Length: 260
Image 1 (cartoon, one colour):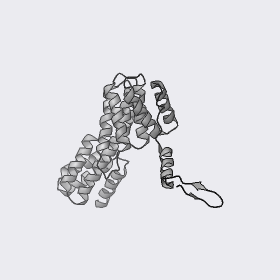
Image 2: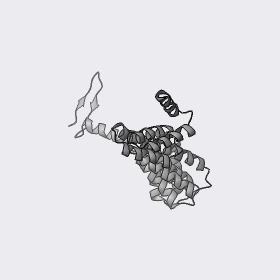
Image 3: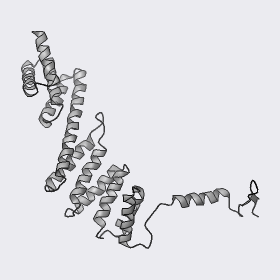
């Protein structure tokens, strides 16, 4: 038999063989059921449903909708847009590597699509979004440069070329700063020969970097420490001539004045 219970005159019929916990589980499952396009919807209606979720920033719903649409209708006219917006949805939910994969698939498998250059830049943006702080490995910073360079090579007329170049420039600045950090690590521990290798690499690989004056300064000191005075003097001359107003040039000038 069922049993009744309640408080203040309210009676609840628990039902034979069915506990309150089971009823609660049913309610929770119903509330948590993932949103999906209507089962009988047309391909276009499925796409529109997913776009609506994307525009309302319900990105997890949009992800399910676009994936379902692509699975059912991979050749539908909206397939390119579905994959692009699927990738954007991943990017907006901090799933950058999944986003990069979807963007790349669109850019490489559909190079003639109107969205191909946008997708290629999406790969760049995805890797840049996970580019870590300087103390950590810069694999994704390097991938940002690689993928943006790919856009410049394969889509030279794209309106995104300027944005890609800007992103490459930012990534190269970061790579140069990372190299300087490593070089200074060796310099501070008196491994001057190892430090010189990193400093010279910065000058050759990232000549436009903001850290060049600082690099020249510590390279000058490194050469002096190992007794290569001619090389040290040439580096000093380069610093004073190319960056005369820098703090590093002023530091050398002051040091020379003190010695005099």
